Image (cartoon, rainbow, N blue to C red):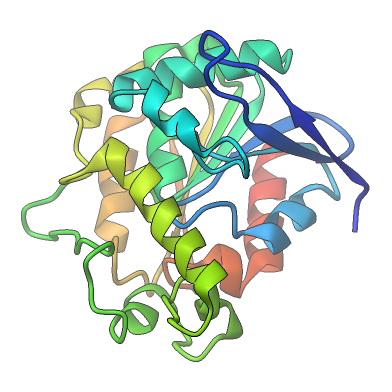
Length: 259
């Protein structure tokens, strides 16, 4: 495992204090996690073998800084917040990799200010809506259905990171809080008009999709590809949570694109 450190920075008028995990070495890469918090630890570790990875918790998800979520009102505050955070970290134009909700944020940063992202990777990303392929609201989906919805192997050990277990109060609170903090920005449906702005993305873009993604069918990858100039769509064997189920495979594809 690559050496890592935590850097706490003051952002958004000194109202948000994220603790950013920085690991590895090489060109900078910002990793934006999905709706369950920064649980894709194995993928981050794999990416850190080739890059200096800045793994960023979304506002409210840094322990001890939970009230920070109150400082941002909506999704557009969140996008501008990431401008501030990149500046505080001294990142002029890093590669940005986002999974699910993190992909939605990454795409908006790249679309609203193309100079801030050198290369972009969206993994099973939220952000668009297709009437013929409606997205299930995983926040209110029955717990018994989630493993089958999000994992290729519903018995994979990592499914414990997303399932509410009343016997694990700490985990129960962590998961509920993470869903609340991220859901605040995309509720009720993950469509903020991104489709109209995709053409503004100038960064070379990889759309990495799992062929077994039941939450966001590969049709969403095709839709992103239609909108982002010269984007590459790569569909691999995996489900929505493939960063947890197959981190080495995902990292290999991402690394090959970014190198």
